[in-house]
Image (tube, rainbow, N blue to C red; front, side):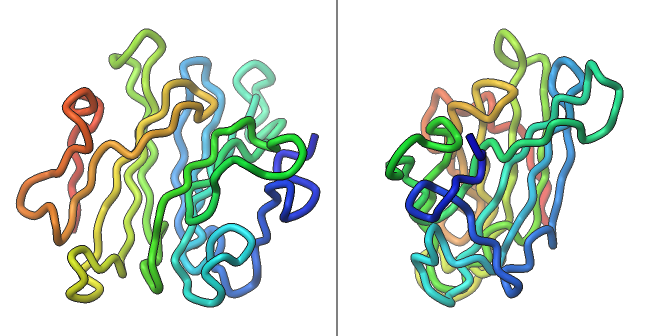
Length: 193
């Protein structure tokens, strides 16, 4: 079972030269010391080039089973993708177990321009991974490329249960817009600049 999928129809990712994959990266660890990696591809065009040549952006989330082995970046796997069109309804088996997040982006939003991945062991039973994702070209209310930061949380160390919990940007300044009141605790603090 290839975590990136065997074909685009099966959920494979297709990183192209102009996508600028890895322009932004952030590392974290899970409760057992296993490495977690978020990598931005801020000029990617959505699942299966859904937004052809519009550079809406994507974020790739990787897991590594290196805590027990003591070898950095051992047994890596693509666990989830955040971006336009990643709806988890691929033909055949879902290569990432339904963890992808279909996050609507528009032309030149550049989702994944910058990233911050954090693990907080004090939240939930086993801790919570939180991800802040910059989208430097986000239009907010449509008045043009003002930028935004989107906050996601996950229910386990393998990026299951990914949820967009908050946004900071044109439609949310000066206040943080929390997607639902139950997510307010896990949204935490974000410093932008």
